[in-house]
Image (cartoon, rainbow, N blue to C red; front, side, top):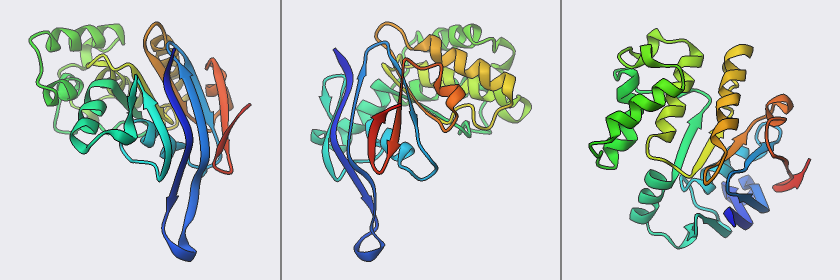
Length: 222
């Protein structure tokens, strides 16, 4: 069974002569436990696509189904709950809250969701698995780029999201730290959890089960 099924997705920015079609009938299917890499030149619509799949934005046309939910049919409240409960986002620039410690950043989605008593233990377990025990009480600016990105990964996993969307997660890291992050993402994609990796790096994409390329608003196998 597919975790993600998108059909005929279209998205245009601007209007009139300034209109720019970014996605033009894109189709995408992602199975449970699968890691799929999406390649494409800058501005091709890769980030737009995962924003639509993750419920950050809505398509102009087409259908997007994730974990049995048709996103185009959800109102704003249901979409917020979908993002909170089903999706974990990992961004190239980490987007950690500078005033919060590593642990506080990890637990932020859980607190938004109304954290259970188990949330702190879950956060500690994730930090331990990612080799970040020493980062729990530190502020982001005291951590390396690789450590900050692993904090961001733990944050994406704390609510047991079934879909992880990673937008150039190793793009701002050195070779060693980038490889560690990609290894973690590869390990995440198993069982019920799937990963979509947006990248421009063919070496990063080589770790995926499948590689797709976004060209002229459509996805094609590579």
